Length: 160
Image 1: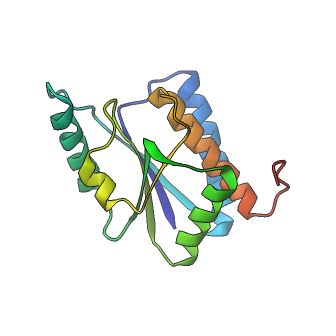
Image 2: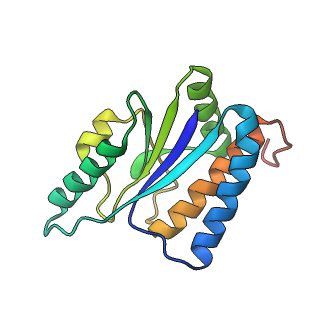
């Protein structure tokens, strides 16, 4: 299953980009033997619309344009269901075992995701109820993808 990260906004050069890239590289190496192939990161521009609803609609349209046909859509959203690392790994494994070709994990803009995306999403999860800067969410996601691949590969996991 090809895994794509779709993020609203750009991650500028610096330590956040380097750390995210490090975990993406680790995931690429460990995930491929499991059939979890890192595809790419798509960065779509933040909408400059004057109100929140319009910004969310415009950002959702950019995501929908980039969404492969029949892709699994996983939204990261503060209103989503909390998930631990093992549950996240199990979710990825279940989709992969079901023969899904593409997984797109979406990080929304500052206003979150448009309700239309929530209706289309296969799952909506959160990294806790706190508000996180998008740069850190990208790092957290990359790390959790790597951690999921190590869990699925049978590496010892200190929380098991």
